[in-house]
Length: 369
Image (cartoon, rainbow, N blue to C red):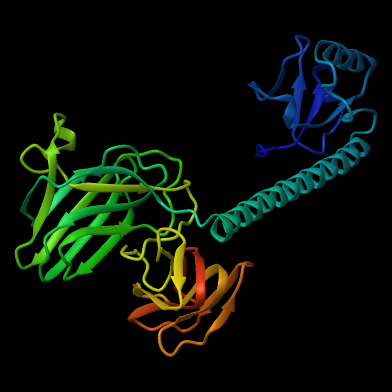
């Protein structure tokens, strides 16, 4: 950062009364102290140093011997006005140099940001990185929920998803994820009429490397709803109800990076996001038959694609209606479905003779890419 700079003219004490000075003056004493009106002044505030006598020049020589380079480029002798003109030119050159350096810093910052964006795009497009399950506290009991607060185990760095076990009921569940140290609300969800089982709440982007204490706040309005409890915890700070923690699942990803969501997850931003939908655990073998794999379409999904390859005579289609068959061979092919509607996604395959299919997870997007 550039410090505040109020330019002064440095004059030896013996020369102060010998001229009318055209700018504020700092005085160099015989003890080499620099002051203005009895207040010490830093040499960084000196724009020009002017001596009018041999005695004053000698004093400047002593200062430069004690602090080499202290008056480099700003020392003058003789006419104060001419010295001031030279000092102004010097200060203008200094400002121009600082502006160039500032422009270079901004350019470096922009390049760093662009590099990070390209890295994030690379992770999205090539790694198909999945959020990693890092904590699973199984359900051992339950209690009737109206309001609950649970301190999550571990810190917030890289946190992407939180899942709680609930019993199905009609009503509205409001969940907030708050960082205790900064009081920042990093996630807010409202789920209407949740079904029984694990309710997964997802953030669009993994939380940053700034590790804080995540707190999950739950509020329920509607019919009686049960919330799952896990085992008791000895630390009161982690206890939610009756000495026990909530039944929880936690996922993490690369801190600060947007990660594809699971299809069953509830996001914080409707209309945005990316999903991964695995259809098969491994290669599939067909013999003179037609196979249909189905998957519910997450709310908000508009475009889906899947990379496939095969050994044998195979045709495949990614569809929601009548299939448009496409030959598939050993070279990977991407099947794409545009303008997906709510309902089921169908991946269909038909083989003549024996064939083996290789499938990546289906990628879903909230908008056309």
